[in-house]
Structures are given as C-alpha cells and as structure tokens.
Length: 356
Image 1: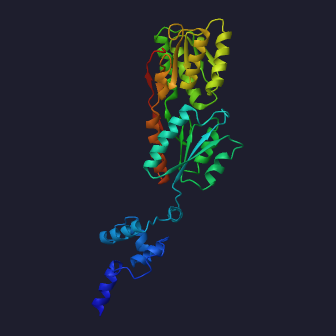
Image 2 (image 1 turned 45 degrees about the horizontal axis):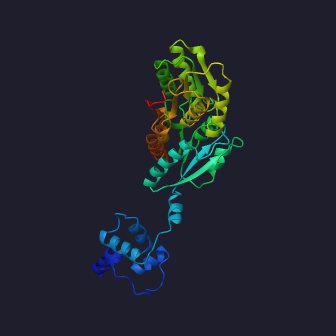
Image 3 (image 1 turned 30 degrees about the vertical axis):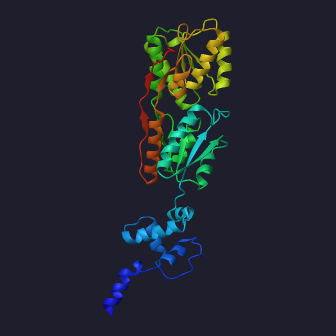
C-alpha cells in the first residue's frame, strides 16, 4: 500500500490526461491543466521551461498548448513578477520645445535602442516631454507602466534628473558627464570632441572660427568649451564667435543665413554642435556663394548616416551611437537588478571628409 501511494505521488504529473470535452476552448492555464491532467502550477512551470518539471512532461504540455493555440497571459505573468515588459524612453525638451522626434539623431538612437530592447524581450514606450514644473519626471516614473527609464538628453533638466536618481535606481541618461552628477549617464567626451573639431580646422589653416549651437544644453556647452580650449591653445582665444542656433534644420538654416549675410568678415571655419546644424550651414553657404571647403571649412558632430551624403560630404565627430545604445540598455538592466553602475564616457573620433 505504501509503495503504491509513493509511486502515485512521484508519477502524478505524468498520468494520462483525464477525459474531457475536446471541443472546450483552452483559454487559461487552469483549462490546459485540466486537459493535461496536472496542476496549474505544473503547467505554468512547464511553459516557462522550468527544470523542476521533467523533460517529458514539459514537452507534452508545450505540445498541448501548441495544439490548442494557447498563449499564456503575459500581463498576468508580469503582474505576478512585478514586471511590465516595457522600458520608457523619454525625450525631455526643456530648451528646444519645438524639436521633433523625427530629428535624425533621435530617430537613429531610437532605432538602436529598439533593437537592443527587442533582443531582451522588452517593448519601448516612447514619450516626448515638454517639462512643466519640477515633477514631470516623477509623474512619468510613477505611472507604473515601465520597469525602467532611459532619457535621451538632459536638456535643461539635470537638477530634476539628479533629484529623482537619488531614490529611483532603474534610470540611465544619454548625455554629458557633469561635475558632481548623481544620475548614471552614457555619452561621448563632448569637450574632447569640440576640441578635436576645432584643432582640425586650425590645422587646416582656419583662424576665424565660429561655433554654431546653443550652450544652454549640457552636451553642447561641453562641445563649446572644448572649442574654446583648442582656440586658447592656439593663441586664438578672442577669435571664436558664437551663434546659439537651434537644432531644428529649417530654423537653423534661416538663422545661419541671416548671420553670415550680416558679417563684414565671414568665418573661415565652422564647428557645428550637430550634423543637422552643419547641414544647415552647408545649405546657407551654397545660397550665399561661399565655396566649401575652399572659403569655409565645416565640421559637424554625431557622424549620422547622412553626413557622408551631403554636398560636399561632411567632416564630423563620431560618438558611436550604436555602441552608446548598447551601453544604455546594458546599464539599465543591471540597475533593474539592483546594481549601482557608474557612468560611461565614450571616446569621440574625428571622421574627415571633403567639407574640411
């Protein structure tokens, strides 16, 4: 008797399915468990490929699920595991309120992030945010719709981001590494990148150099400081002009066109804070009859795919956005697991083309 009872306990999950109406729809794990003749817990573990369930039983239950077109309730699973299966990607626009998600840099970064998150079985939940008050990030995180947050850019919101980072761990930011920074960031060495671009122009004979970009944003401020540093090194500190142009192509073009038209002496070199600004500068130069690179040399920043296809092809500072996206996702998932991760600073590289 005892032996028989013991045998039944050990083999209960392997017994043939009980007889039931085969036409009954299989909508839940309980339905599938009834069909398989096992507990709902055994079905749940089998569908999750748990090693606690024998290979034979797992295969049988998975085949039954396939035969009956059964799909587990992912939302219910996520609720039990306290995971949503989604990552929030926020684009805060505190200084460029008219900038669109269709901006080439955003589109490029979002593509790489979507690929990385998809490979980990996660969805990307995108939000373009115009910060209204100091609690915009608290509201976004408090929605409970995501397991973690990636911010693309700090804009003018570094203090808000730092405050939230003190109590919310699963958050990583694409942007500048700032002194005393609390939040975890990934981004290029912007100061070094600005210096690389400016030194390149000086080496090519430029002496009247202008910087196109608004230093209100931390990344651009660092690029501007790098340009100023290179000018000081060359004894040209007083000759760096600043045009705080916006990042949108049409707005940038109009501002650059007007600025160049009004200059008694046009610069012979331009450091642009982005490839979009550099492209706008190329267009303005063509309209005003300036020959690039003979009369004016131009260097962009980002080295986006279109930089090689402008006329002339654009010299640019590469910050390897694909590598940056991998770092953002890797650091975020490590932080979701409770790890305290340091920021990552990528090495910028000068990519020389015909515009300089």
